[in-house]
Image 1 (cartoon, rainbow, N blue to C red):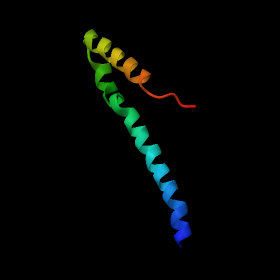
Image 2: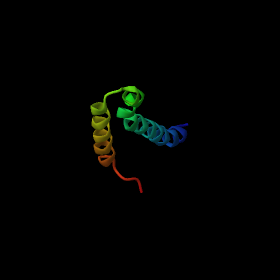
Image 3: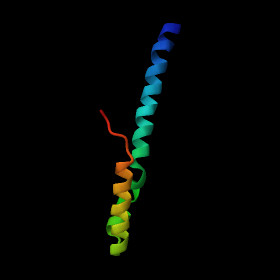
Image 4: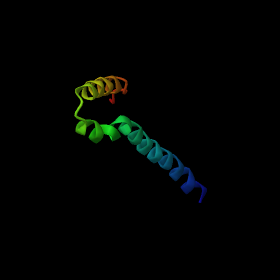
Length: 62
């Protein structure tokens, strides 16, 4: 039964890493609907700056 645990353990770690990374990427996009409904142009400008700076800090996938 130890071999089964040694097989499952790395797969479980990979599973958690993949799903936690996805949640981290969502970060600022949770606020998207609120920003979209805001009538102030300043908020939209700041949002675009934030999104551009956030997307450039993400590592590129290969």
